[in-house]
Image 1 (tube, rainbow, N blue to C red):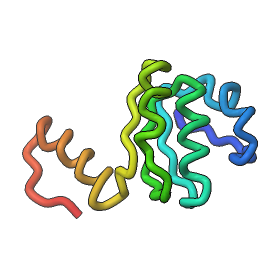
Image 2: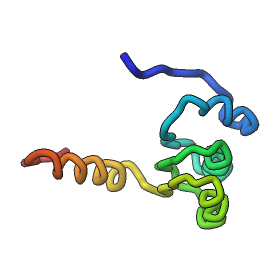
Image 3: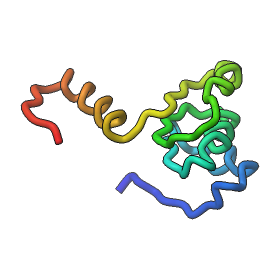
Length: 101
């Protein structure tokens, strides 16, 4: 019940600050040809982000921007392995995990 959805044109990077205003954390999962510019727009909006997309550009080009905005950026996280491992790691600290798929 706490999840809200929006329809937006993600190629309109100028709208990101207002689009992401209420967000605490952003997870980007866009096609590779959009990945770098989307990540840059999210960072410019002052939001921490986990990127599960793969894109050919060098994400380290955005390091200075992220530092200047005071945000954390996890790039090329992937889904599995990647995000699944992070989720498992967290819950493994909170409870005994016997099996994970």
